[in-house]
Length: 192
Ligand SMILES: CCCCCCCC/C=C\CCCCCCCC(=O)SCCNC(=O)CCNC(=O)[C@H](O)C(C)(C)COP(=O)(O)OP(=O)(O)OC[C@H]1O[C@@H](n2cnc3c(N)ncnc32)[C@H](O)[C@@H]1OP(=O)(O)O
Image 1 (cartoon, rainbow, N blue to C red):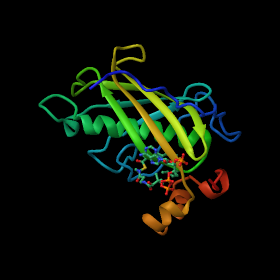
Image 2: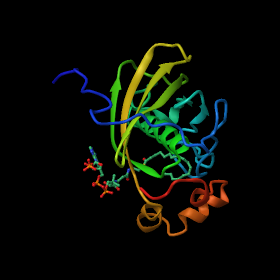
Image 3: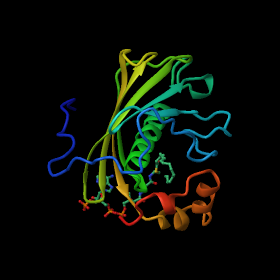
Image 4: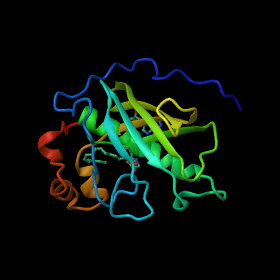
């Protein structure tokens, strides 16, 4: 096994400017779906991730680890940390590029244990786009924006049409997003 990183983003990926309608620096991104395990406010055991646009193609998210998120006693479960990064990367891609996309691949490096009670400060960015593929990465730091790196992640997101959500998920998904203040059909570029 090697810790040697592969080139990222891969050769051929191009820089991805923010969409003209993307929320600007300082914008709170809010909840994209109230029942989302990552950001929703209706799930008691959820991650309750909160995100703010930092600058350009960067979003800062916060996730506080509770006893609902344990693996070993007093420590966060790695799979839930990966979930937090999926959410942080997904919200970065979705909100800044305004293209519906789903996670195709997610890599996580766990560098330090993350204790219950700590807050992970996740800084995520869009690294590039190649065809339908969007490359994004993030660092998660313990308890402060300049704290020690505990987790790093890279995600490959694949642009999809809105029918991805209605045909594989809830037929009313687009209407539900609209009811929750996300009129994706109007606000997003929806033809991958
Ligand atoms: C969601 C929000 C919508 C709107 C909300 C409003 C506002 C809020 C904003 C934002 C918040 C969002 C926050 C969400 C955060 C969580 C996100 C998730 O967890 S998503 C759930 C988990 N992921 C899945 O369930 C995917 C399941 N997989 C699939 O459906 C398909 O495999 C899919 C769509 C990924 C690709 O299938 P194909 O048939 O369309 O396309 P093919 O040709 O297979 O892939 C396209 C390209 O991507 C590469 N690719 C695909 N998967 C890959 C992989 N695993 N590794 C490497 N490359 C891969 C392929 O090699 C191909 O590349 P070549 O064009 O040939 O160069």
